Length: 115
Image (tube, rainbow, N blue to C red; front, side, top):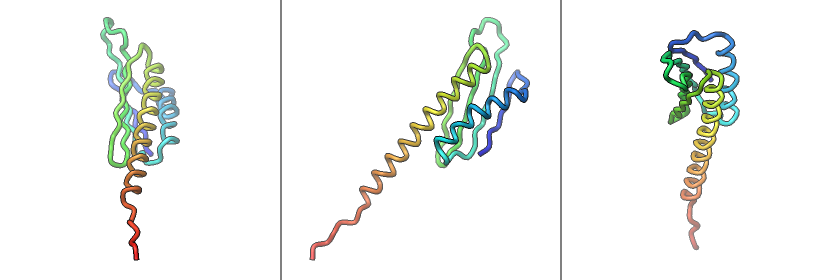
């Protein structure tokens, strides 16, 4: 699984990159079908905007994509919020797929023939 970290109006330091990979990488423990994660960190330089640090995550899985975005006053806080939200979304997606899979197994059973 690849985690790509990009920045807008922000220079991505090694510390931020390591923090993102640590927090967002935990999602892979919940679901093994993740192909890649793209993280975009943005800083809005307008002083009138209170939540000026934005973290966006696109998580590509087999057959679907989960997109999550969070805003906060600091970059580390926005990364924490987005990682928690991503974990909830991926867990929800995994449970939904498992439920659909279990229903399809039940509906495809072969009826017994009476002799």
